[in-house]
Length: 487
Image 1 (cartoon, rainbow, N blue to C red):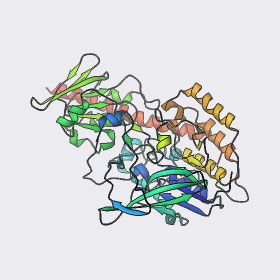
Image 2: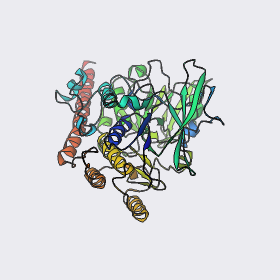
Image 3: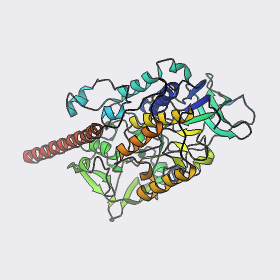
Image 4: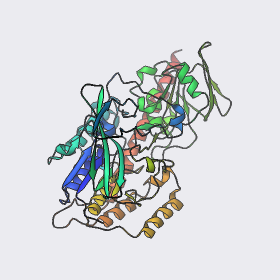
């Protein structure tokens, strides 16, 4: 492989931030450039303006996991063109009371611990030694990673990567970029070339809502009645309203528990009987929650004010005010259209160790996993990519890389579970660490061995959340008993 001297990083969230340090510490690259489409670092931990209204422009494309399309690019670059108004789902899911849901140590990078600050609400819920952190602490943590060692000068904010393509003649990656001008009417377009590209844009941006007959008509007839959990900002909006929450993974339980004492009773929660392996169904054991089977279809009529949700067991939920879909996200790569077409079930095939694109490993990914030690696993992946791009290690033969993918499909399946590190965290961390090797001549970021205590603390944090739900459920039952006794 030719010597790599210039690298582009897509995204300044946690994965991109640690990738900068991993690459810089190898001390062999002439150029490291980071492109972030938001106004600051933080990725999905940045708060949007209070007046933000979620857009769901095409539910059919959202259901097909194809809503984030490549933007048309001017034929000649550089240039200035009219402002592109194609919706890009760049908002975040941050709400004021959001706290992390896993142990802060598991989230922190090995050399950069999270600050010990805890909110009063956090302490009330989980005690003075709570392992969780408020979203503002996470945002500040990520920004602090980039505002050190001169890294802030490597980042171009308000800059969207619209296309990444390999020029076969030169062997360079051509990155097409767009940046809005201050006049609010135009965009500046240009290209930059690099020897390698690290893709780290995150995958909690584009909401996924499964196809549901009648849902499009409901949204059209009653704007604001259909939402994805990404739009959740707090329970007050739903006070006394007949509400349906769909989903039982992570956001579904959180939102359901927050609404159980606020929305009209009972709160209707649509679940399939499959719950998150960390959190199970404890949040849904609240006495004000009634679990419903999957939705078959929805009927609505603006003239008669009909808003009815029909479930598999024949149940009709009438006069529904809100349906909130906590049904996850779609991983999209609009700037890599050829690869984007191959994504299936949120998995990109031909990605060795979830990091190296097998067809050309100068295209690397950091964060293309699920159910991992976020953010810590990003560090391991970033260091592995940095070692390879610095020419300090080599990858195994293609045949071995193919076998790795085939073996994982046989073990985890060819879908979302393929990218989930749970429950084999230590195996993956140690395999990546051994592949990356140790720093040489003081150059490179070291990786410590995976410790058993990490997993123990990780699991213990989940038990704290479960304990919170159990307490809340019992308190609600006691309130109901008192209410009945006073009648």
